[in-house]
Image (spheres, one colour):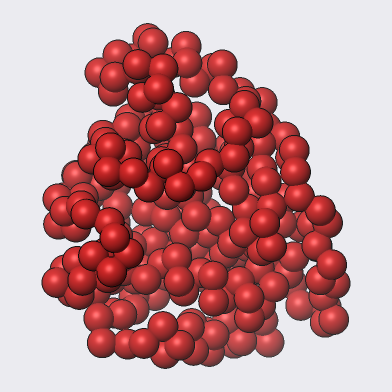
Length: 237
């Protein structure tokens, strides 16, 4: 595996203060509010935003295109070794690139929705992406951001267990299903949760010591404000 930055201009944002570089890890199930909260924090604090769920969707698409089934370990290993990873920046958001391909809306298709949890459960794939995900903190520093906000299902437990702030967002399943439907995505929230929580490799779980936020009855701004209070306290200490 090769890791390289292939696109993206240096951020024009230069930190006005001398605040330390901060890493925020946000975990939670589908439609718990991770992406919206991460993007809001990214804009407020000049943080590079990373959605690791898109990494698994993108690699799932490439593996499916190559005809690699989750049960075919040898073929999976060979295919992964041929993938060249990079990073493309669009505003504050960093996207994975695979062999110079920048993921598009195809990674949100029903076929990917139905299969991504099966591939994401594979230890080989999670190991393949581990170092790349951790390297994005250096990308954020190099691009002049004041920190990194990374969302996923194992960020605070595996990727950045020593992050400055580890959050776990959750919400009532019915609320999450409604949010998913508004996004035009048809998948089973509870089934995804069960699969992600029961896998052997880096299962979805509440990281020890993480701050829990129930977003069921909160607006996006209210969630962001709650987190902002914690961030301000960390940065002023």
